[in-house]
Length: 531
Image (cartoon, rainbow, N blue to C red; front, side, top):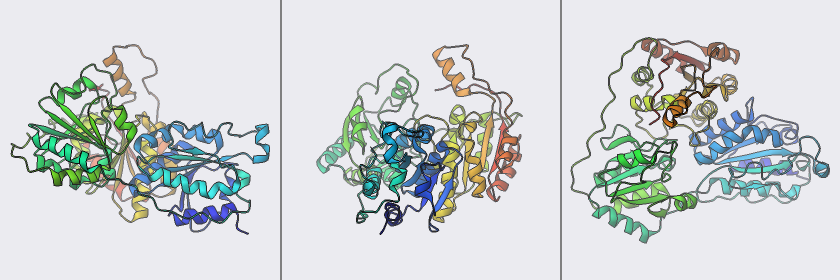
């Protein structure tokens, strides 16, 4: 007779989920024993790294990923990157072991006391099956929940003695829709408002990239002859950044953002919240006289917007429909975005000099995964992305995502046969949050360059302290870290880079290596303005 484990693995096969990311524990071993030959297990040395790798893999493949965690402690370890997966809208099936059912009343060691509450509110659904026989059907429901918009992580707590139990007939492997069209009448109203607008502007979010809708965004922008901004703090790029209509990334504070939109009477936000802020800088949400139209696939996102009229729907479908409905505008094109100022290649390099050099040596068709908060403005000034799926970072603002996510994105490039070169830029502070991910990259023999700007401080926190006038904060300096030794200890190559020419040669070599290469780059300890 088929067991619960047999039926579950068959269901995972039918859903195309034959890669499992995790760090095994005793409560997971009954699920993982005699691991099938047609499955792959991606081992991380910490649960947060396992979730980050799975997140990057799911985003780069466009398919949900399965992460297997160790009961309550493992889920707790993973929570930071589960929070990021929630904000990233990444479809993850997160399963965690639970103690043997017949001992749960006693709460023995490694019992998850309230397993479905632990990951809340950062999962779309959390469940522990009432019967062992319900495990496969619960997995099917978890899959359907994770992929439907807004996509996100789900959680199943699975007692370790369930796997050997006799199974019920297997559940049907179902397909579910992952896009829904906007209301036609509301869409026509939005189109009429845009057509009558004197000076419209588009603000695009990560959902445009997730929907594969760059072409539709370009068509609408050109039809309206409207400037295009990226929404604040984007986790993905949303529009070709060499297009003459593209203006850059909006600041993530209320007053400066409204000032940047001054002069526009209609603001169309698609695929982003209204708005993602970080520091509180008082001001109006919009400039005087401006009207906001908001398209999102998330009812909660629409409900919490402080201004504007909302329309629920897929970003790509909405953009394509609006491009068809709006008549061509007769207005001058927007002024082009100014280029970055020239930089001096003094040693140690400034952040601008580092990223200017990286831009000059950027691989064709490259993909960037970044987590260097204090250097982000400099990075965005010098690296411009012209193809979808070329930029990934954390929407949550939480550190420890970027390095494992880069491993997942690089693995996805290999597994899907796309073989786009992947480069990570990880600040020396961020580097240590999930540094264990280097070992996984080395074991997988991924040709992943990891560029580490080394300023020996939490510069983003010093910038925030300056903005909020809170001097004397302790713990913001990071002396005594040997990134080269750490990288080599995990099985990576490592080369310190001091000059732009060294960066070009080292990057080219790393992209053709048979293992990851960590490239620490000493930079000046300048504190950039946070806005």
